[in-house]
Image 1 (cartoon, one colour):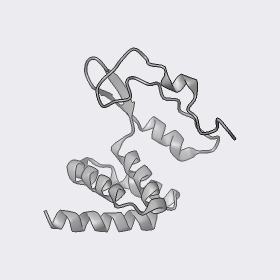
Image 2 (cartoon, rainbow, N blue to C red; image 1 turned 30 degrees about the vertical axis):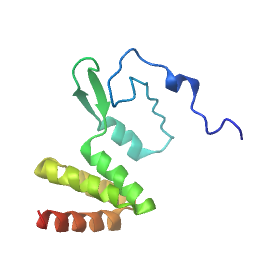
Image 3 (cartoon, rainbow, N blue to C red; image 1 turned 90 degrees about the vertical axis):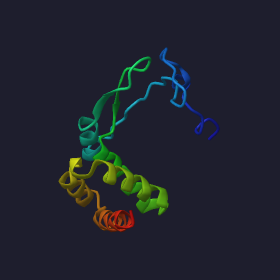
Image 4 (cartoon, rainbow, N blue to C red; image 1 turned 180 degrees about the vertical axis):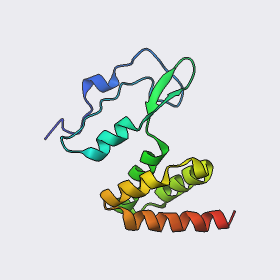
Length: 129
């Protein structure tokens, strides 16, 4: 059991870039389990953003997939920070969000009730603004 909770050696290797507040250019490894349709879709749905020098271009989750991951975490933990994060994304992006994508995947991932609950809370939050 010893060593199972330690980070792999390659995780600490720098890629030559550093930026305050970020993981100093650590490489990330993506592993997909066979048959994990959602994670495969999320990987295809990712966005390439340019953070400028010295970091440059990086791949990030789409806002829709970030919401879906936050829904999963909220269902498990019930921590309100996930609802706040989702609300921030929804209120910032508004109509730019692909709500049909979120709704479709929330159904497939058995998150429909959680998605409805969070949407109601976001609407309450936006009404108090």
